[in-house]
Length: 266
Image (cartoon, rainbow, N blue to C red):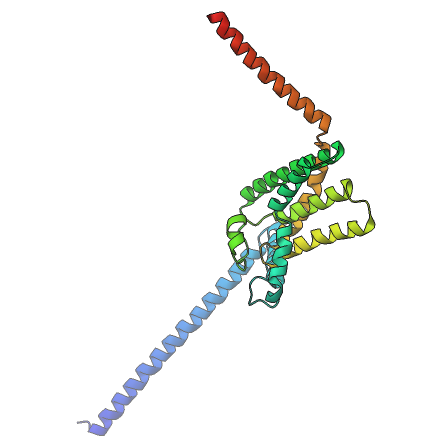
């Protein structure tokens, strides 16, 4: 017959043995989980290395673009490091908006004193409309969202588009700067002011976190090339008058033909 002390010792031995076996089982499970996780990580890494070099390079460049754009968004809100100059940066941003450019161009076109001045303003207005069309087409095709830092203001709620690529301000700044340098500006000081304005407008898009760096860079290149297209499609005042007279003659002929057919039927 076993004594109570021996039974207690046997129970303790059984309990410690069960605990030891459970701890050993847990350790085996933990080691197996760490093994599977390490193998999974290795597999994911091998899959990323097996991707094409173009895809790896593109992802690397996009990561740099995101990082640099986030660092440059110094005026994204009032709490940003440069939030105190945010109103001034927004004023520079508004100077590159299409609305003041269109109104100013149309006003100068209507108040122009010479035919040459009216011809330049007419082509500038057509260039602004062409810029709006091309930027809208590219944005609709790419559909890139704006940075997460972008803060919607009262003005931007109505005038800022959802898509980010490319920057319409950057395309407009580059195109208008090249247009002014080629057609209107002839002094060195004014050239410096025009180029500086285009740079500041493009930089304001990054400081306000409206766009990524690639949006602004592509927009500048796109706007620079757009002026070459404007030069090829340049509309002279005589050509415009001929087109308007031709359309007017067509409408008169159609109206006269309609009246003649009505009289013939009667």
